[in-house]
Length: 340
Image 1 (cartoon, rainbow, N blue to C red):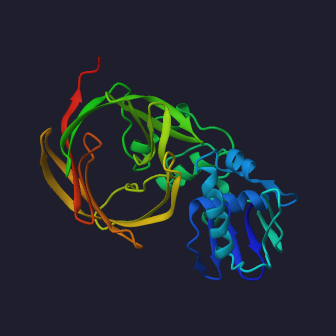
Image 2 (cartoon, rainbow, N blue to C red; image 1 turned 45 degrees about the vertical axis):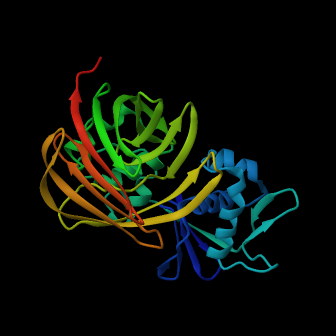
Image 3 (cartoon, rainbow, N blue to C red; image 1 turned 30 degrees about the vertical axis):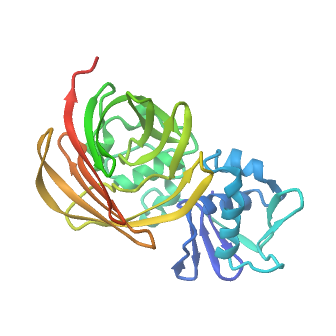
């Protein structure tokens, strides 16, 4: 039996697998970080949970401790808690939090051939097959109780599930960035692969010492590491790509952004993406047949994004980020280069 949903009070339903919080038939705007905290508090509702425990066990320090209270406040608002009376979450003078609301678990016993139980089924390690949709496969990787390895996925994402092709370790390429500062070139190398909270990630390095983590299953950026320190994290990822790509497809990219050095966190940054067409694009590295992906802000954020992704060789060849008039253009300059 797998408990994947909770009825909270009279009006709320928490889907712990996704996670999502619903009020009646409407999904709330509570972001992924507050939802992760809420699920953890519910799963440990027999006691007060310290802020340190939340950071170390639930969030694994993806956010700075100074932003924790901001996310707890978001949970209060999402559940309608206000004033001095707390219906769902109580806090004590020692900085601990406890879920105290009325709650009922919805336990499911999934059937393999039942489509409506697909999300519950994917909570358990199951043999992979070519009938899985790619978004189901991503959920399998993220929610499996065990760590999924390279041996589990093989070439399934590109062969059967419409995902991006696997890139070989040692691949090198050069990009050219143009913005208000000037023109700069960066040489990147796929230095290896690793695991990051049950996600398989590419580790990209450049000669300046920057390290970028990229979700292997989606090609979306997760975060940056500079001189051995995490500088920022997009959680769960940037959301620019959603597989498979086809003309007319739309999706919403939603992530919380944390800047560690500045101790700043921005929750629920949402962008509506659309594959608007296929077109040949010429960049310094050559001419590529690409999908054009356009992103428009879903909330108050003013940045627009345009991406050109080439299925062959399986890389973004151009992107334009336009933020309140400050435009940044990236183009592929050389690809591939001989590995050393």
